[in-house]
Amino acid sequence: MPGVADAQRIPAPFKLASRAFRKRSSVIRIGDVAIGGDSVVLMAGPCTIESEEQLVRTAEAVASAGARVLRGGAFKPRTSPYSFQGLGEEGLKLIRRVADAYGLLVISEVMDRSQIAMMVPYVDIFQVGARNMQNFTLLRDLGKVERAVMVKRGLSATVDESLMSAEYVMSGGNEQVMVCERGVRGYETYTRNTLDLNAVAVAKALSHLPVIADPSHAVGVRDKIVPLARASIAAGADGLLLEVHHDPERAICDGPQSLFPEQFAALAEQLRLIASAVGRGL
Ligand code: PEP
Ligand code: MN
Image (cartoon, rainbow, N blue to C red; front, side):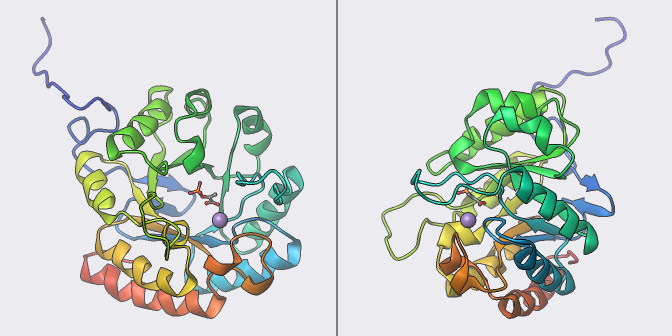
């Protein structure tokens, strides 16, 4: 066609998320935090928002150890309908206030498209949970918001499928998308799931999007999360999502996999060394 200098075929089914479309890794900038840039980013906090005291004590600990994002679910996708389902909007008000007080961003899970508009004022990053990775109406609606989105890989999804979920959000016009490896279901019973670090390396090669690793939900056993967190950064993850609780023994949700604040602080120190060995900061 006249005026066309060059045309390139993008063979991957995920066109916008593909490295063939954009060679350079994408950086998501939110305030002074850059995800996918020179430094790896730590996102940490409780599984679920329980109380102001819990958030303040946890946020203080993770912020002083170097975390940039506070995690905490207000809507929880629990296996049992009788388990605690989250504090909803009250919880989001709490996490926003506490995160602001400690200079942290907020990541929280959206379970349904009906929650998006209400959540926008409280969150910086919408988390799409593993069980919702192929909720295509939710993904489409997240393509229209001016907020970053982190799509977690489903329990039995392939890397291609998880990049297609990212593509859904991007095709709606939202380019601030990252994917998250959170463990896949295997046959091992000692750990909760199996952290698939292959997927981190593969996703980094196939896509320009930032790749986050969540060893907490992958391993599910507190003492084993530290080594897998180290391995994730060594494998090239752009950041970590980690469950930390000021008092894990009393956590309402996922206590056995929540790190003690001191464990998180010691881990962050080790991650600084590993990040620098792979040419990154923290
Ligand atoms: C979570 O991060 O709190 C969570 C529920 O994770 P996943 O969707 O990976 O199970
Ligand atoms: Mn959890």
